[in-house]
Image 1 (cartoon, rainbow, N blue to C red):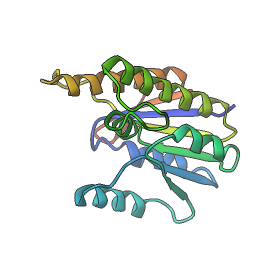
Image 2 (tube, rainbow, N blue to C red; image 1 turned 30 degrees about the vertical axis):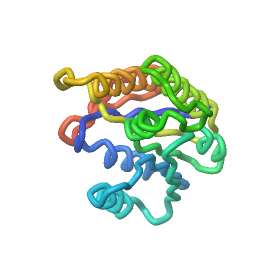
Image 3 (tube, rainbow, N blue to C red; image 1 turned 45 degrees about the horizontal axis):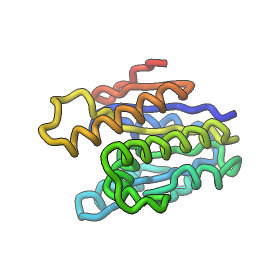
Image 4 (tube, one colour; image 1 turned 180 degrees about the horizontal axis):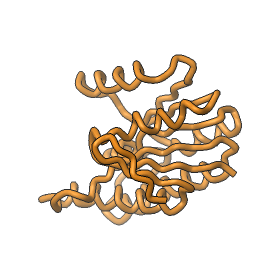
Length: 183
């Protein structure tokens, strides 16, 4: 069974840099990037992340069906690093068809679908022969959003983070570049 490490924190808290530091202890690393670079600012963020990673790491860009990617990698890497769950949720949230035939969904269906995808990912990570580091944003520490769509996203991300933290062997919370081990 794989060791699962979960790294959680706010925007620009140092999550990715910390997780990449943990990953450098492994010989073969596969970095699964879930971001979709749809504008210039996001393309620059992606380039910054790429430049920081060692050249021998393999990068796979996967906006959907990350469980399948992890499953296909089973044992082919010492470590699989997934960056990040909240972007993965965003991709599914905005396009709930994702990996399924679901065309239109209401609030309850969308939450059920996304949590089912997160639970499939957790199961695949648990069964993997590769260790896994999962990065996610903590989005529940601010004020309550003023619209239903944002509240729904925040709630789903919170439920996903709880599930991931519950299954992880180690959990770190990042604050101002400092890792706090929670589990």
